[in-house]
Image (tube, one colour):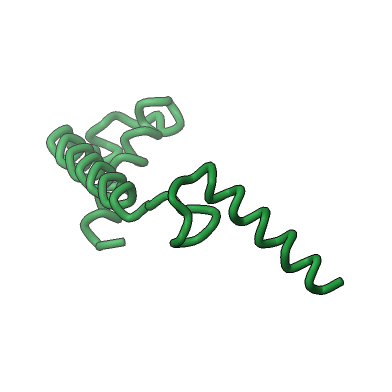
Length: 91
């Protein structure tokens, strides 16, 4: 986590505590600055969107039967057959 992201999260946690009444001070007393809240929200949302977009690009469905399987259903069947074949060989 970068220092900027950490600061943005702390800003939002401070704001959330004030907003929900856990911190009963005024915004000024609590050191909450509206522009900092906006900046923190923008930064954290951008991070989340980018992180989720990158994560979905890296996920690839696996074929159960390995690279020789032609699709996911027959891939599963290929894997089951291979397991059964190995069990029969083992006796």
